Amino acid sequence: GHQAVAPIWHVLPALRVVLRGTDLVRTTVGLRYFDLSRRPRPSDAPDVDYGAWLVSPDAQTPAVTPRSPAAKAGLRAGDVILEIQGTTLDQRTSLNALLQDLTPGTTVRVRIRRGTDEQTLELTLGAARV
Image 1: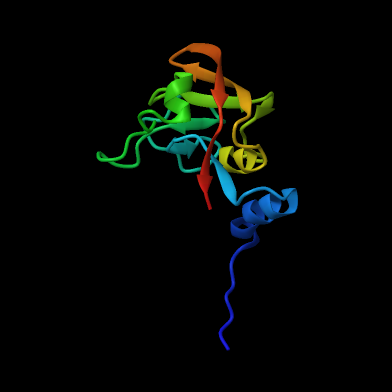
Image 2: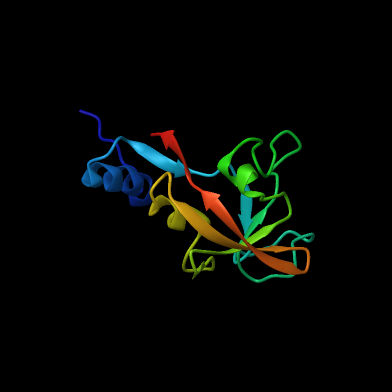
């Protein structure tokens, strides 16, 4: 027979949902981003060493999906998400890793940098079927 091999990080989100005994859904917010703790960095990246920089991967894909939970919370292209619920997004904790441990429907505090200003927004996490 054939064997299927997948990295554990691809399986963990679904396994967590099954163990919780809930429907097979994942947390979604409607963002595209670049992890600022990664190297090399784009030349136009903001002057911050950590966080999730909301940026489009190409001309056709928005950084913040219209009508998404992120858009409803007020997040915009160019913002840098620094923390969620007091947890800093850095080399140890990525945005994806943090989101997969949160339950859809939960409202979280998101500390962002917009230009040179920092502010905190409230984001209600969405759900997508796995």
